[in-house]
Image (cartoon, rainbow over all chains, first blue to last red; front, top):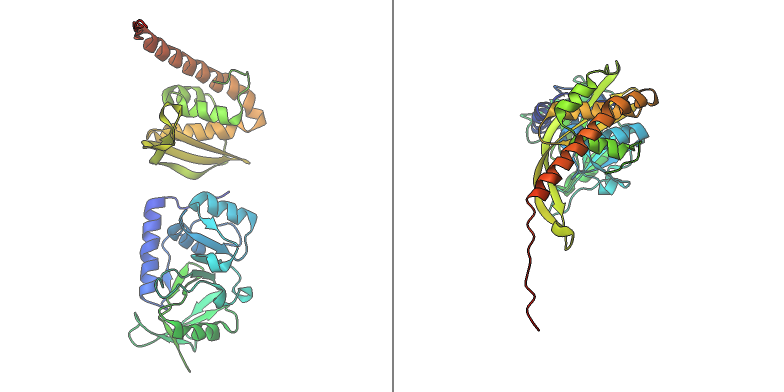
Length: 191
Length: 148
């Protein structure tokens, strides 16, 4: 078994601040301040998010529930693991190419749109030179960012969910030390 | 308390947690901590809610909160855990370390001899003294049985 944050209180507070900022300024990569040790297949940046956001009151779905990773998470966070993506507050996607469709996750209901899933997706890289542009609250005009390692129809699936606002799914992408927030309100611009 | 010569893990964890921290520190002084120590969960202090049936009957209720310090350490293949009452982090660390080392067959025998046994005697003595003090203040109530 591995250790978690060296300073549980301060490290999770600093990480929380960055995650808050990542969601407030969508599609802008930010560096996570602390990278804790993480057992495969969990990336250290994803582990930092899980340690910061999850505790005994959150349900988590793991795409690849490897024994060591599950033990590590349960020891350090006490989170409740669920077998169905639909039941999860948080979902850890360690292999995005083979992930379930976005429809498999909770989008909340009209009375409680906050009862939706937040996805933590481990992608391969972020590039600022891509063709994908985003707009929406928190972005002044538009933000250009390419995210490598997503399933081919990911953006179509996401766009298909857009009319259901305020229902939807929020995503944290992680690659290396960086995190990108993509709340449900961020639109992908065509062309 | 269990009086069998060999305490099982739950009993030694309980004993380590209830021992006097100074006694535990003195006893553990003779043992070098393993080289490959990982503090999985550094000692941290929090509150636990005590629940119980006072008097042993009736439903459980929240009796009150208690300060607890917990700690987990990995030594080799063994993981030691400790939960101790109060906020003495050194006590929790030593108890977790002792728990991890006691799971190692090589170290178990000397540890039982030089740590567990003296601590158990000290704890028994402390309990004995407390019960003597309590016994000395015992008051017998006699009631006169009313006729008919």
